[in-house]
Amino acid sequence: MAVEYEATALQHMLDAEGLYPPIWVRNPRLANGEISPFGLVTNLTASRELVCSALGLDDHRRAAAWWAQRQERRIEPVTISAKDAPVRETLIDGDDVDLSLLPATLQHEGNPGPYLTAAHATTFDPESGIDNSAIQRCWLKDARRMSWFPYPNSHNARNMRAWHERGEPCPVAFWIGHHPAVSVAAQVKLGYPESHWPAAGGLLGEPVRLTPSLNFDGTLLVPADAEIVIEGLVHPEATAPDGPFAEYTGFLGPAVDAPVCEVLSMSYREDAVLHDCGSGLADNLTPDNIAMEGKLYSLARAVSPRLINVHAPAQGRRFLALLQFDGALAGEVRDALAAVLAWRRVKTAVALDSDIDLFDPQQVNWALATRFQWDRDLIRVDGLSTSLLDPSLEPGRKTASKAGLDATLPRYPSTPPVAHPEPAALKKAADLLRRLTDSGLADDWPRL
View (tube, rainbow, N blue to C red):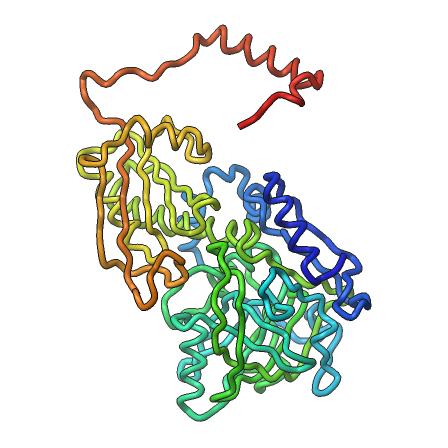
């Protein structure tokens, strides 16, 4: 399979069918027709069930409360020597480095070249020495240069600016591939400056193993169990065009001027596999949305003890949050809606009763259609912070209007009961449907 377009096209086809298996390309074909010495894996985090299973969570529907509890736990990392670090099995530096051998993907029409899409950039604050990690894209320009786009408000960008204000290049290491718990936890939003390694250990349930970088006198630590680590310097004023590139919104983001990394070294495991992420697809959305659910659960639960669950469906990108309550008292639902709307990415929050399945769009739509009145149940708040990647924002606008929709059932004496089938008849119908399905007679039935 070719790294140019083909791997991502397969992800789009699977996504359209609602199928989310990991894709492992053992012998990826590079743009020049040669086979990369590295394997390629993508769609690894597209399935919510698989991601939760990798995190040790059996029921993906309970991820919000589980994550909210785990995100407070911290386990400090441990440092091991290079000789014991799997990622140091092969070392390449200087002119021997050739980024073009990596099976970096060219994903969508309009992209300018091959990108590292699941590389965690790790920098550190020159004053405190505290590090930060985040997935940030890199366009491979040539054998030893790549653009790197740290979102301007990110902690990595703040670290980089601190180095440049001192007139010094910013050290950076990009690590690729790890246990999903480490990769996901490295995306958790923390205070500044605050290292991700203790949070990742808390989610993993054991210390993350780190090893000193090959450069920078070992002051920057990298994951010992990563697949690949690329180390380099970002010099002041060194920039180059980057993009257009697909964002989590599903739209191509515009071309920008981005810092350029001069690559100093690369190390990797024997038989290393490059982890790719389908930008704008479920692969890109699922892990961060699960982490987002945990954060929103904590925010809403603090003002409404009767909150029981939160879901951020991938179809809503990162702009939609569904909140579930069990017997909330007057004002509680609105308090919780207001709390989650203050979270930068959330643009619409919907409150639902405990009898509504947050993971079933048909039930959510039914609740909105039958339990909601615009004049009574809508909360609108203007001028709140938002993601500037929202394509509905007009140029130059930096705040958003947000809405909370209370679709919980009004507690009126005249409220009609929900229509339920008779239990014994429902059991018989379920048995009949199972027999028809097992026989294959239901295979050609029309679906929504």
